[in-house]
Image 1 (cartoon, helix red, strand yellow):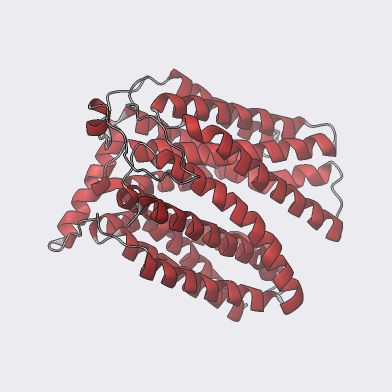
Image 2: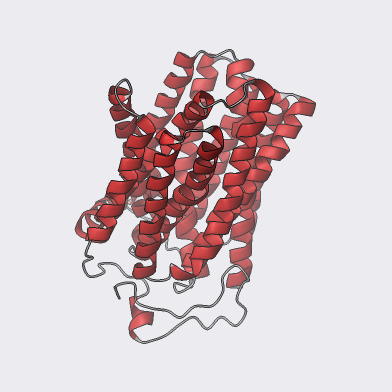
Length: 431
């Protein structure tokens, strides 16, 4: 099948999934408080249970994708996700919502890394895959903004439970479309001794993450940045409220506008930087710039003397620092692994995100009474910047594009996709 057609389908699928995911969560976050009547303690318990379930299932789900197939893993993700979404709208009780949120978290572990592994292998254009992953992040941001508007309006006219169940049904339909229209021809499935193969894949993925100094640094950066990002998402509404953000419907409109502005800025930022991410040098410079932006934005948010400046800082942080660090890290990790352990390697990095959230939340909780917590999260971005800047990479241990680059070869695809402009292949170790 034409690689450009596969790339377009992949972007459309990511866009639609973001519409449904973000729209569903907007309505669900209000539904759990207003319709289900959950207390803050209930919400924190549900969040903790979801985090634990995601952490436990992340590596097994990645190994399943590398053993049985990325397409089956994504199909399972859609099935579990749809079940969790529909259950949420039909059963507004604490226990059903707890189970649904845990199932929701588990469902994402089956998609985490599997989607990138599928696209990398099936499209099979290593000198252009960074452009596709940048476009993926961009279209996810656009879809998130549209999802907020669409499902916010749907919930207003039909009620929150109806909007939630509708999102779940559409997520199931989207998974069916993926199963029927997305091929998987380049993956070699393990057909015997599945447990032995799965354990071997997990072992090789862990060994790569430890032996490759660049990947080890990216693990550290992921822990720092994701911990800071998670804390920022929970804390910035408090900072804005303290500076005079209106309450009630006006405040809700403010939060919606801030979120949409962040999504628009993220899409623009990803468009600007994507051309420079085809080498490790470009990824390194881009990641340092994103982390510096995060440190600046978080510091400004924590120290802003008025609401307008704080809002601008929040938009800069959520629209530039957060999406760029995540996308660039994903591209860099993807370049330094191989097809047979690709999903598992990405799963290790997803686990490091959960570790960052847990460690950062615990640290901030201990320091909240004596320190400006948002400024502390800025320090995490500053440490991440220094970690990348001081890093000196080792030779590439698993370079899927090594053969093409050492011969000077590039892709010969004659019909490039508009979202994936042509670039010259350059070895990622050329720092």
